[in-house]
Amino acid sequence: MNNQEIKISIVIIGYNTESYLSETLKAIDKLKVHQENIEVIYVDDGSNDKSCDIFNSTTLSYRKKMFKLKENSGRVVARSKGIELAQYDWILFLNSNIVVSQNLIIEYTNSISNCDALVYMGSLKYQSQDSTFCNYLNHPGRGINNYKNHSLVHYTNVLFSNCLVRRSLFDSINFNIKLRSYGGEELDWAYRVNQKFPNEIRASKYAIALRNNHPNFIDHTNKLLEFGEFNFIQLNEALQLDIVKYKVLLKSNRFFLLIFKIILHLSFKLYKTPGINVMIIKLGFLSAILSGYYKTKLSSDFKIT
Image 1 (cartoon, helix red, strand yellow):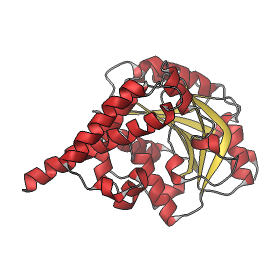
Image 2 (cartoon, helix red, strand yellow):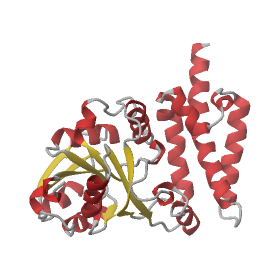
Image 3 (cartoon, one colour):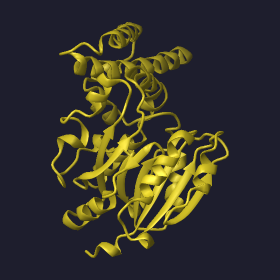
Image 4 (tube, helix red, strand yellow):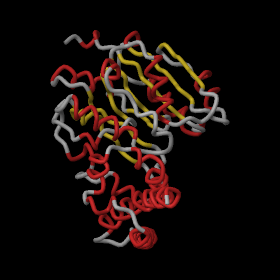
């Protein structure tokens, strides 16, 4: 395939990220790519800072589009609007706190030329002031780090922080509009893609991007509480089970809620302990999701009663 035939719509979503967006755009402008084959779309999710002003005032070598949602509506709504505005055959999803490598498009183009797929997942490197959590996020055995270039990728590793998707895929599989809070939208979408189009997700390992200033372990885990409380409960039960591994954990009761709240609290205290930090971090994630889930389920059961 001729590299010049591949045209990409870069869709960036953001909310109150004026401190990061400028660096994201500057990195995009340094991409090694034919200018006419790229458009940059920024969908602002109802920010009340200067994010939109920064996008409008930043000079880029590519065609620019911007759309601002009237109110904060969540990632599903923002990305769906970006897809609607995109005019090219491929969509590169980025967040507004992502800094891409200069060769990003070249690497994705090489992946398209060398292995046919509908979804290509690039590599993410993380920067965080929490060194223990940062080491966990960047571990060689985690995420795309664990894959060979162009190999098949398990759907749970799809993240729209740096992901290239054939636009036509959204004609048959779109985002779950019920997922209005934090987390799970990529997971739910990738799960359904894998069900309908198995073996269509590939690693583009050398398409590298940096996630700037990732939250520390405690802040990130608190976001997973939100995921458990609002979005996790909306997922297909088979997908829920894929996340928690044991079906008994989906049967909420007050004892389970107490146990996982205790484990969550302990994870905040112990996650920096050498030798067990990876296990503690994973337990913290699971405990946060289930604590939020049980809170919602128990509240719902009480109302029904």
